[in-house]
Image (cartoon, rainbow, N blue to C red; front, side, top):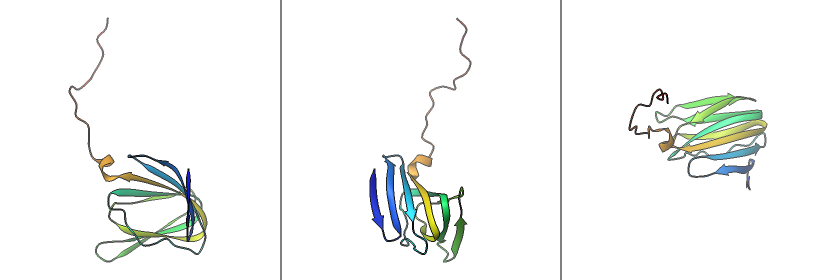
Length: 118
């Protein structure tokens, strides 16, 4: 596991592979991350403790605010600018997955069905 310091706290990389990236973020109240986006990944926030505001910047110029407390989640789509603001000390799990994981990627050779009796 890799721990990365941030101005707002730190993250610990729990799992990263070509299909998913999973992090635990410990955030300090009164701090915010940079305004940013992820070009090819969705980003899910799950709050374990504390309170976090996730601000998203819509293409039409509007801003959406979602306040999350313990047990709550929100997802940010690829390409959507966003930032989180720590309203109080918080522990948040972040899950990232590539856009291609949500596309239909199965090709069936048959329909399956009931197995024949011996």
